[in-house]
Amino acid sequence: MRHVIAIDQGTTGSTVLVLDEQLQVKGRGYKEFRQIYPKPGWVEHDPEDIWGSVTAALGQALAGIAPSSIAAVGITNQRETAILWDRKTGAPVHNAIVWQDRRTADRCAQLKASGKEERVKQLTGLTLDPYFSGTKIHWMLNNVEGLATRARAGEIAFGTVDSYLVSRLTGGAVHATDVTNASRTLLLDLHSLAWSDELLEIMGVPRALLPAVLPSSGPIGQTRGVPGLPDGIPIAGIAGDQQSALFGQACFAPGDAKCTYGTGAFILMNTGDKAVASKSGLLTTVAWQLSTGELRYALEGSAFIAGAAVQWLRDGLQFFSSAKEIEGLAASVPDSAGVIVVPAFAGLGAPHWRPEGRGAIMGLTRGTTRAHIARATLEGIALQNVDILRAMERDSGRPLTVLKVDGGASANDLLMQFQSDVLGVEISRPELVETTALGAAFLAGLGTGVWKDQAEVTTTWREQKRFKPTTDRAAVAEHLKRWDAAVAKA
Image (tube, rainbow, N blue to C red; front, top):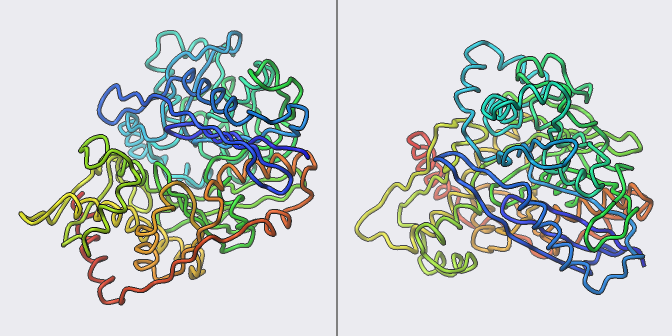
């Protein structure tokens, strides 16, 4: 029996799964790491903490697994987070600037004011927003003494988290990324799938920093010097976490869509081999590229805060001690009693793109309780997605019929039922909600011949529960009206 390792490096922790040839989970590890908030709106990670969490999770997952049975390693990762490191030593030269970080809002505003936004969108499918990697790189080059000179001299390497992990996993031998992560940097031409000199000039990023761009499935490198892993295991799959979840959810047909409820909420719809330009505030991104040459694009909408809002209730307001307790608390009241929570703690993402937006709680009365705020927080997570999915339907010309869901918060039945109610479509939750890791494993297994084609993941994907809309549409319309008014004020 061969095994495939999936490394799922997320925003707050790293998960490692070991899957067998039937895509059954045979080992699991998880390790959280520090979140660093130097200033309001700034979010950083220590890359050494990231690496430490990966090796710790690997050690847990590999307990009882014969090293000789490991056929491949796949990586999926928090996207857009930017890391710079010394090519010779591998040592980071600054903390990673996380995708949630808003410090480059002024830089993005300057680029917009100089008329660059439309050209950037044509080339990248993205909007000018602090979310993406390009302005984060520029900030580090201009705020760490001597770094820009060293970068131009080729002494410094840039990578999103996948690229950093590949470097560490291969003992520094490989500096590469895949097309899905590269398409999130504001530096890749979405159509040629190559780094763009025009974009590099706009962003002020030297080409010498950049990794090689490879397909999402196929040979990337081999392990060397990794604690607990033999040398020579192929790294054969990489995809950004949301594209990996789309693949792991078997969303292989145009029009198939999924929502991952993690730190944020991320919705992707497969648009086939065409890069559909959004007119509704969405992003166009690479879904995956296989070694066979198969290339798929997707429309994407991101709400920056989802599960993180529940963490805020737990840690910031101390409403409960465990995030799982929110469902019982929220279900203890029949509704939110008119309370609306807009969880825009890191600005408003798609389709609004208002980095200056902030979280808001509205409709409070003397009768408001913790339970009402908890319920309104869950509802706010779902209501953000309505805005995104309606925009997606307009851009794609396809009505949504079923939304596949995954990620930690998808286990919350109250949230999933409300999501179905306000969207008016069915919600399908799989048996394995860690489909982000499943996608990475499957890409790696495809790249090494463990699995022959996508039909194998389609036959192994199994639904655990389906939620159908129940609330009358007049009540939903009234709720959406209150939501729109709250968003306008956030």
